[in-house]
Amino acid sequence: MDSFDNAILQRKQFFIDSVAKFCDKCGTPYTVDDLNIVQSTGAGTIIHFSCRNCKAKHVASFVGPLGMTQRMPVNIDLDSSEMKRFMSKKEVSKENLLDVYEELKSRKTITV
Image (cartoon, rainbow, N blue to C red; front, side, top):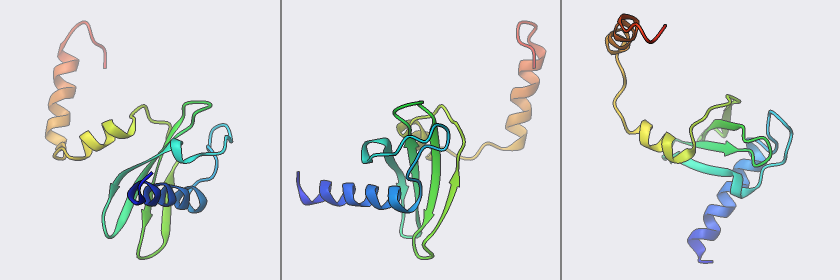
């Protein structure tokens, strides 16, 4: 293991110790293998926790300079690679959302 890998493991352990030690759903303790750093900037980090026991997924943000965390214990179905892919996309406008809604509503096979 090189120093880069060791630094990543230490950083993941820091997030476990300071953000979430256990799964909010079943209480299983997290390990470094259950955590992925989705995005990291100088200002903060977005962290994805995935429970190996109940498969619940949670997202948290850590604001570095302030040392603050915000946990969002939302059971999502995206894994960390999917989150990275969608985070790079442009924002969806309200008009786009309404267009999709109207299209789905007009189809007889789909109920909205």
